[in-house]
Amino acid sequence: MNARPASSRAFTLIETISVIIILAVAVPPMILAVRDAAVRSADPVLASRARWLAAERLEDIIADRHSPSRGYAYVISGNYPAESTISGFAGFSRSVTITETNATLSNPGTGYKLATVTVTWLSPVFGSESFAVSTVITDYTP
Image (cartoon, rainbow, N blue to C red):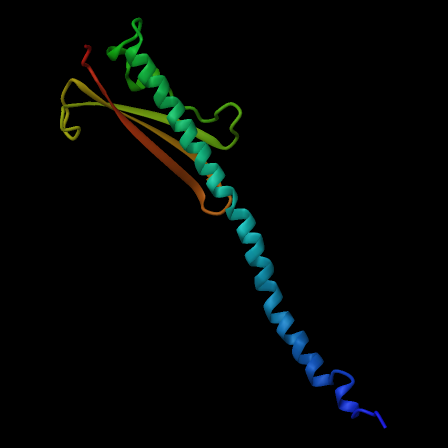
């Protein structure tokens, strides 16, 4: 005879209830983790765009400094108004701060300007975020 005991042919009620409880406890956190990972994957892309937008504005400022028609005197905050919206980049804003300083870059003076571009955007995870980049512009002409 090749008969097996009845208990080895099927799951018991206890085993079935145990599996249901384990799945009920484990599946929701896994789904939330996958959703959170998908949302967070957008953050590096937004930060990269912010860096690019900041670098773009700094390049404009540096180009104005070296322009024969504009030069060092043109590089002031008033010539670079804040942009509450940037065309083609919804949710991003950009501002420029230029302060004249001395060679230490920490005290007021002349001959050096510290140009700082700040880009702000709305992150789906962290809310409002910002990225700032600065460069030094000198009055030196070779």
